[in-house]
Length: 82
Length: 82
Length: 151
Length: 151
Image (tube, rainbow over all chains, first blue to last red; front, top):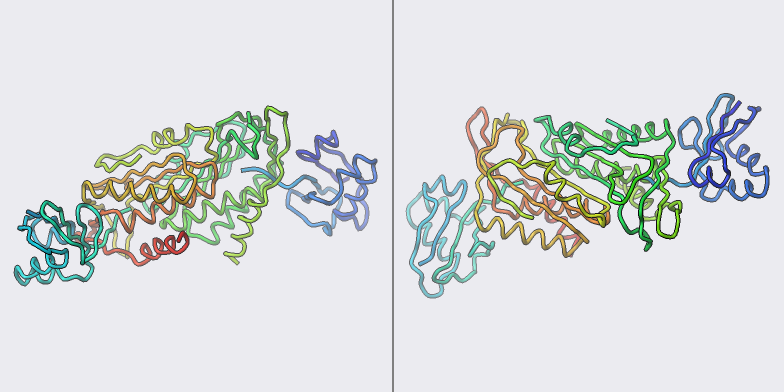
């Protein structure tokens, strides 16, 4: 299983803060994004790669990163702290 | 009269923190420096223009500044505060 | 010391923790607060969300990066989350060093990097309703300038 | 606010005085202390002399210059004179601004200019006796860099 987290605007727009998906061979951050985007029109819009960041196991990542069973993958907008 | 002040290393080396000199026509910071330097060998060395700063009426000055009756002229080494 | 917390912090206490060492000639601190105007809307408060776990990791990475570049002694980073009202303190950065140039540069580096790397998100509560803030180009520029300067 | 005083200052009090306005997003403070090593000699304390009257004028000029360049709200400059022991606070600079870049730049500008313009002189008390400090080339460079950047 892979744990997926959503933060901030994404969390609100998707009305969910987390879900799990099954692990599979050769899974990447980009493939997970595509899979989630296929859920419906709302998800398709929100999971578009513009202004979308991804972290794997709490480290910022790119869209080519391999994702393995047990990993935690988070999607969120550009950060605005400080 | 013109009030002359000395600070820090100068004050210690000259063993004086202030003195007064008579005002005269066309007096400048440089002329006062020369006049003081002529006092004796100690003053001559200490009042040499290397690493010597001068202020007139509590504003940093150059060596061409005119000095008038009632002015306050201070000599001191480069500052080291903060 | 890195703290991510809901509660307010007391600058006086943080200063005392920083200021104890005689080897330090310089102590520089930065405090960021909720201010009343942002992009023309009058702000009544903020809701600050973060990514627990990742936040602490990122702040620790940023501290380590600063220590690679400058001779620092103590470093404190505190960032709050949750609901904050106008005028409340959001973030504290404090650094000490033998040298003032290093203390200034490191303190500014830390807040600049925090702003573009640490997973915090601000939602502003204004008289027109609440809105998630967009990242500022000026913050990205500030972070990029350090990158150019230090590499 | 400018103060030239023999007594110590309390950073907590100065911070509270600075931090009251909701228009300010950023508060940057610098504290300089007597540290234990300077040019290889172990320092036991300092004697700080200044030029009463001129000091306050120069600090006020420096504050005005900073305000010409950056949008500042509050500015506090405190500098002590007299005898100070190891670890004691010498100088406090605090500035507030809507913008953090302005607050950092102005705070650093103020201390850089103070170091090269304000009539203070330090005499260090070391285990080898007391010596008047020489001005540092690095301090002149710092001041000159602002001059080049701002004009």
